[in-house]
Image 1 (cartoon, rainbow, N blue to C red):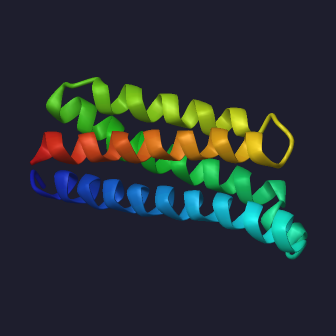
Image 2: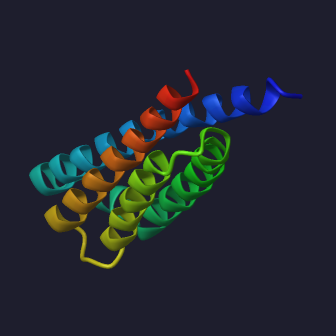
Length: 123
């Protein structure tokens, strides 16, 4: 059991980092495809996509980084990730477009950094 929790936490950190990257790609492609080509607005700009993404990011970061903070007693990964989640939440409060993309990208970079710090503390 002692090795199971760090293994699960490490997996969740890696999943969180991948999802952060996918989210950033979604934001950039969304702007390029929708603004540049006028295609896919309904799918790329659907607020539900962003809400579900924030929910997934919050759950994964909360579990993985929360467990990590308890294990290694360092607040930095948790604080960095929570600031990132705050930026992502703020992106839901603005209209679709550049502002939303910038807030989201800042947020996912910080969440990914929190996961990275969490993994490094474990190693």
